[in-house]
Structures are given as C-alpha cells and as structure tokens.
Length: 239
Image 1 (cartoon, rainbow, N blue to C red):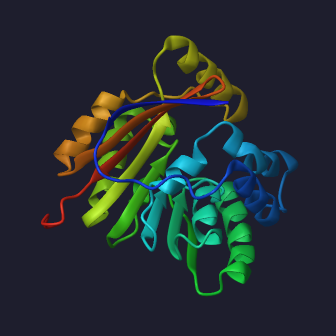
Image 2 (cartoon, rainbow, N blue to C red):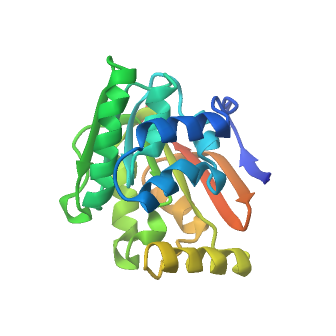
Image 3 (cartoon, rainbow, N blue to C red):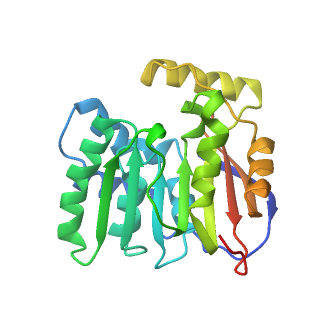
C-alpha cells in the first residue's frame, strides 16, 4: 500500500500510465536470463519503488539518458509502453548491464523502431556526450561515494537540454527508522554502507546547474521512503 504527500508542485504532470501489474508483466517478459535473485528483483521492484510514478513524469516522445540504469527496468517500461523510443542507459555494474542488454534484445522485438543502448560505464569515464530531453537518476546517489556525489549530480544535470528535465529520485534520510531500514536493505542486497544525500543539497546543486525545481514529492511504500524531484532547464537556457 502506498501513501503519498506532495511537498511542492508546479507544472502539469500526467497520471501514471502503467499499473503495477503492467510493470510486473513487462519485467517477467523481458528479464528471463541470469541469476534467479537478479530476475526476482526486477520482477518485483515495482512493489518497493514508485516506478509507475517516475514513468508518468517522463514526457511522451522524449529521448532519455538514465544514469545508473541498473538492469534497465525503468527504460524498458518506457519503451515497452510506447512512451519513449530513444533511450540510453549507463551503469557501473557490468552484471547489471549484461542483464539490461539481454532485456534490450527482447525489447527490440516488441518495439522494432526503438533505439535502445545500454552501456557499461564507470563514473571516472564521465557520461555520454550530447544532451537529452530527459536525464534520470533513480536510486543512484546513495550508492555514490560522498566525495563523488556532487560531480555525479552536476554531470547528469549538464546533459539536460534547454526545456528538458532532470528526474531525480533517491531514498529519504529521514525519518531515521525508514533510513535505517533502507540502509539494512542495502547492506544485505548490495553489501554496501550507503551515503545519503540530503534532498536539500540536491535542490541546491540543481540551482547551481541552472535548473528550476518543478516538482517535489515524497512517497512511502512499505517501510521505504522515496524523495522525487523534477528539475527543469528553462527553454531559453544556453548550454
């Protein structure tokens, strides 16, 4: 069960276009190879993360760069639903990219006109050249070392073209019980002591990047707390 509280919102964003059952169906159809646990996590990620809400915030027809795409579920849903056809995902995990590429091959059969690229890329290599209508960074920042967080955020923001958006979501650092339970989750699943970035810091970095906050939202699913931001680059902005 999901409860939501909108902290601040401007602009018009469409309602979710996919039900949780739709996302589960797409995941089961595309993620059929690899370790059982990895497939299980893709098949059930919608139960603990607001995937449908994030999808609804992507304007139809956008070209999308997903920074830290993991196994590629978010981009797969955008393409499989027909919302976007030109998507590019990058991730530092070669295993995750292998899974994403396998799913991408099946996805290309569903959407033959799509352009799907999943790329193994380390943070030190920077991001792909070019600008995008949408740059997304979903549940990535808390995995980035503290001394690299600002660079990662600014690099992603710099890829947003004029009039485009930066879709940012991460786990909340408060209340403490939610933050603690999520930290335990990552200790078990990722074997990592995560580094929370206060959402106020992300807001400040967005301003530094020339972006304007268009939506601020908090959601809770089970014991997981999610902070969602949409930052927009003004149409008259010059990169």
